Amino acid sequence: EVRLVQSGAEVKKPGDSLRISCKTSGYTFTDTWIAWVRQLPGRGLECVGIIYPADSDARYSPSFQGQVTISVDRSVKTAYLQWSSLKASDTAMYYCARRHSSHEAGDFWGQGTQVTVSS
Amino acid sequence: SYVLTQPPSVSVAPGRTATITCGGNNIGDKSVHWYQQKPGQAPVLLIYYDSDRPSGIPDRFSGSNSGNTATLTISRVEAGDEADYSCQVWDRNDLWVFGGGTRLTVL
Image (tube, rainbow over the protein chains, first blue to last red):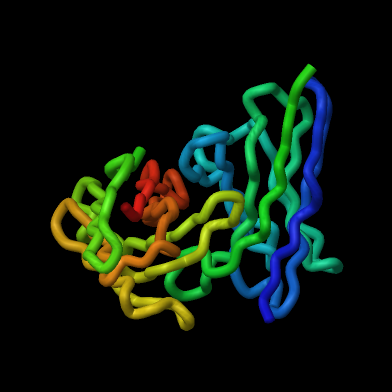
């Protein structure tokens, strides 16, 4: 059974650093891309970026380039999304999703990680 | 950047058919995927490659794509179909591009 399990909710202050995780199981981790998706409160879905675990090739949507870093640890089959200096505007739900190897859609999703940034 | 446009809301009576559109420039040349998201839950893939359904998705859900509009059709709507529905395409610059989402209300 394919599963993506994300780390728990976080409450941080502006300027803090943060790394959230997405632990995968039930498939070959290096076979296909993992995406990170942001959902602002009451808003639609936005792609933060994607990463190919086999070679750590990471690509970012223009709005997020330079704002976050996506990485993987192949030894624990886990993808990460990190910030070096959080802003209040980063407050959102973040999802990871597996991109299907053929049709490119997100066929399995994590349960989401709520990130709250407040002074 | 590539933009997908969805109506913010659609309302339908139980048992009737709901149609949710997703507009984009020559979207018919792209593969469109659809997701259902219920409150407090992660998105679920409903339709991929314009009209294919993952296993476990009822055949009441169908999709089409042509010209500048892709369409998600939900037949014999049930109360449990009340949710947000989002379309998505792949763009080489913007990666996954999502529509703004449509809230389906079952009257």
